[in-house]
Image (cartoon, rainbow, N blue to C red; front, side, top):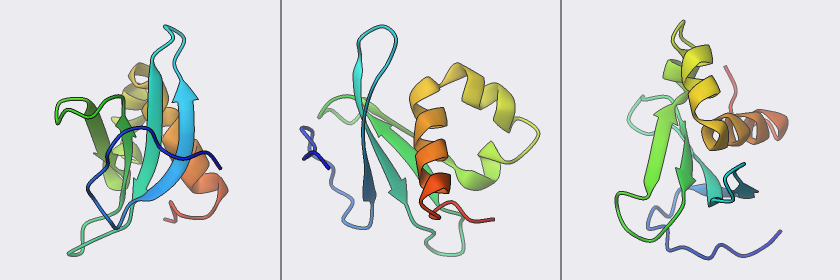
Length: 91
């Protein structure tokens, strides 16, 4: 697997690889395991600045709002798919 280009400060996160969005925007995808009884989350990073990252908790993505959120955030949908494929995003 390739090495991330952007700094990611959470040591608990698991790198899921990169993803290039339709518009050509390069993203790095992560899975952050559950902490403090909160479900894990999937994260997309597209730069080093704090505002160039977004994450959604698995519980939110599995809620009735989840499909709409996943439609709007292609990198998050891909991170969620990859996390499920390797068994990280368990119910």
